Length: 323
Image (tube, rainbow, N blue to C red):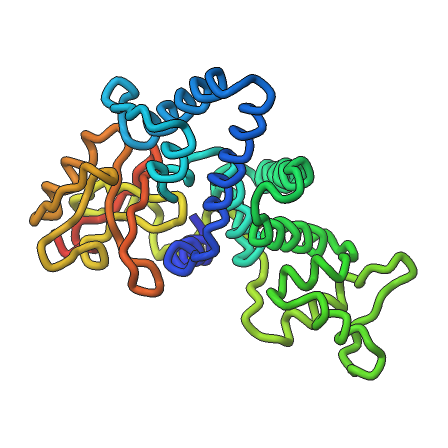
């Protein structure tokens, strides 16, 4: 993987705090209430309880191991579902991926050709825009998700030298629409103005974004191999002993340094967490889990649970202080 993409992924994983997936729980509850009106309480309760159990089966283990307390589907969805569960939903992963693309310039997935990555970004933007437009008014506060999708639309258009709407520029810059409208005033001296279609030309938008500082250039088109970073061919290198470590979708991984707390490493899904003092033993236990879970600090120092992806990272043991 290109070094800059790898570095950006790690930075994104440490800094990501928008947490758009949280709104999906509100949308699901609102959907259940609509379903209850449509089918009646009994059928809706059965359907929503079954959906709750299936989600927990995906995030916490086998459905056969889940004990369903008959407290009504609303209680199940409001009290027994947390952000780590919602983060496993397809829409949640799409929104998190779009956040990485919009604000960090990253590909939705580092694998694949440039054309495949471009197509995946376009498909995801379209799907999430359709989701936002389909959600009935008042069902949930979609403001954070709307900003992410609008920012992703802006970056994608700018990367193709296409003009963008003022709302899209505001989203990408994380400023209010009023600030952008002030920017467009001739007296602002910004050099940013609207074209005949009421859009902001790409060169002017990019110049302003770059001049503000903090804007990250797009790296999603970077090649996946960078021979200039290698002093020798892969065949000539000896990594020594290697270990495989789980990686979360936010780019973070089970790091022996940052993931260690006073008592050791906390692993396992919520409600079944355990502390393991030895790092290699913690790795062995994570490898036996259907979905590996561990706690790690975010950029604010707050500890939270993350879930690992099916693929694991290969790390030289010496780089982890194990060799």
